[in-house]
Length: 478
Image (cartoon, rainbow, N blue to C red; front, side):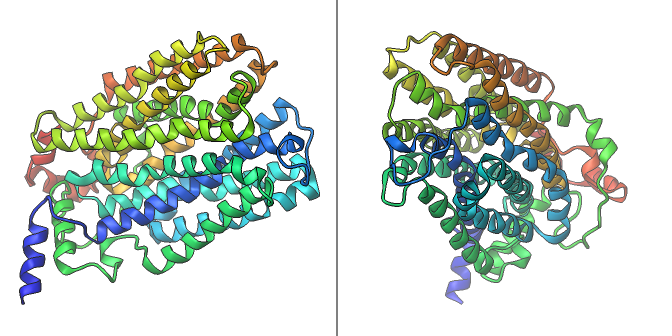
């Protein structure tokens, strides 16, 4: 009896302590850590694979040109964009746990096989393997967004979403920081793939036993926390928590004719262009322009993403305080944090373009500041999918991530065509200018046309009257 009273009081307070929803967020954080470690490991490994003699001569070295390396780095996204939209639909049908677990499990096994594929078929077979890995990871973000839409109540959405998505940076940090050490170890560059793939397999086992697509499917959750989540979600839904679920057909025409969603695509694409330009090319820039060896290259390449990891929590704390004090509306908050995450990096990228090659410390500081400020976008466009449509959050993420990652394909390829001499700083300058311009336009459109209220097409027709009769609390905040 005493325990039940304590639980009730605990979950009635919106600032309650940790619950099962936070543990689920931690599992998703770990999943994204695995996903990004598997995604970026080639960025550093390819440096050692093409220069094994200076790192660990006991392992094969491949004579791959800069264009070939750019092709390999972009090949992941060829498969990645294909499965985005189907992933959102499948996650709604079968549950986000099934699609997330399936995609990352297969991807982890393929990572372990990468050295074997390189030995058997050279860059062509590695390229094919990365395409398949991309197909598998195409399920990640739509699945995570689908899961979050069921676990994160509106008042915790930005904070909980940030805690989940900083797994992107954590995986990047760990992989980049350890890749140089692993490449120089007795295991050589193949150990980079063995370690990242092996950890992915461990996570898959843990998530199989403890992960859940929704609170209703979770065996560990208390009735008090379940009711808290259901009531929180019901506040912004036209249907009450105890109303029968309606099977909703995806309103494709309404989605693609919604200005708020179209500018969300643009904002997501702009972020991806700059983010993946830097993520895939920083190791090469560090080595060829700043003259850093493989070990310091890996550590310095990870430093900007460590800054992004830390700044994500800073921005999340600021957002939490703004929400508690009702200082700004939800839509203003989304635009403010998105502007911090894109327009400040726009300025620093221009500054980075004019840093002399002998001023490596300045260049590293600017890179850290540029990427660090990107952490603010988790409170901007990243959560806007759920703002617009909790029912179709995974589908929306699949669509925007599909389009945005076409940018992730084009950006490294464009670098390969622009940077014909990787030691020429003026060619890298063009790369930075293009990224800054994309940031300017992308966020500008989001600021002008972006919204953060639930769109009419989120609900089935029968529910629209119920929405008009429901509490206007969330709508009025936007």
